[in-house]
Image (spheres, rainbow, N blue to C red):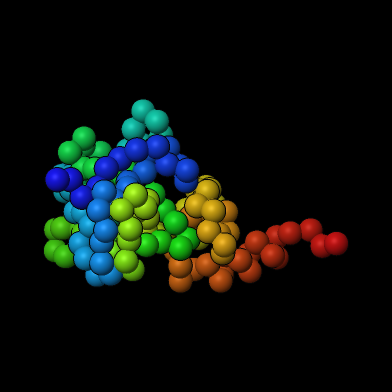
Length: 149
């Protein structure tokens, strides 16, 4: 039995959904693909399915066999990516119920966040995909850039 499935997401396009319950700390799915030494290019829909293992090495996750590529970003994720050598696992940060969308923090830097809108709907969402540790700095940037009343 598959533990996850891809289907239409309220966050963005296609999402990854649990087909059974997962306990906190449990491996949900492995992000699979070829290891490449140049950043993978966007697909025909303008999406890049890749995870960086370390500087100069990525997993190109664009292949159909990589169902994990459908996991969307959330500012309040229920899972996280955990690199282990040449493998990246998606692991539950908390208990996840069957039918729930699997999400993780994409971890974009401040520059990349400017061109990647977030539609996760989380209470603390800044409207951009930005790594959790950088959100305070990004929020300050947004406040400084706004016109004053």
